[in-house]
Length: 232
Ligand SMILES: [Fe+2]
Image 1 (tube, rainbow, N blue to C red):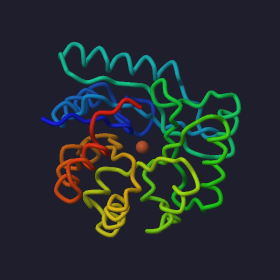
Image 2 (spheres, rainbow, N blue to C red; image 1 turned 180 degrees about the vertical axis):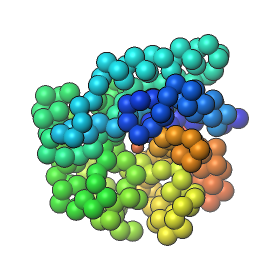
Image 3 (cartoon, rainbow, N blue to C red; image 1 turned 90 degrees about the vertical axis):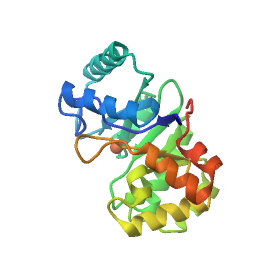
Image 4 (cartoon, rainbow, N blue to C red; image 1 turned 60 degrees about the vertical axis):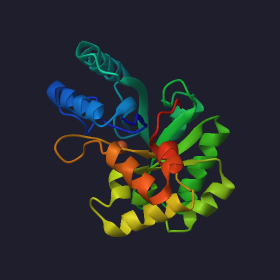
């Protein structure tokens, strides 16, 4: 069975719009193991200026999840992280170097409002890099400024990773979005596929399906690079 790393999910309960309670978190963890995921960065939403992030609660719930995994004897490692919504208020976290990163790395998973313009997006990337972070753009397929060709131009200008969601790649909801995501993959513009799992029943991991799709359409090396085990 193939083994995968998921760098974007919301399975820690009671922190954001992810899992609602411990039982739902446990069911999601069960699905992760069935889906072949052996490492997941649990990236609850951090929304500077909108809502205070409760780091103590997050850490306590992350520990609860790890205890459940140990009790079940699962081969699944959970690492800390956050999905940081870019806003002016985020600059404060950046300046004080308090922005949560993926695990112990300098990678920051950053998301934007759907209508973000290119100028704002590039300003955010520039600022993150200036402060010593490596930006990973969460689900670029959601932003209206992301045409077929813009990611290519963006990657020529900045050292940035684009992370698309497995469901968008597979076209579970929108065929046009899937066409664009598959075009970006073909052009080598996507750095990772992640699940962005939230809650049952609709937003659950589909890494095995994403891997199979990539292997069939783009070859095993691409599937492995985008979904395989990785230590960020
Ligand atoms: Fe997310």
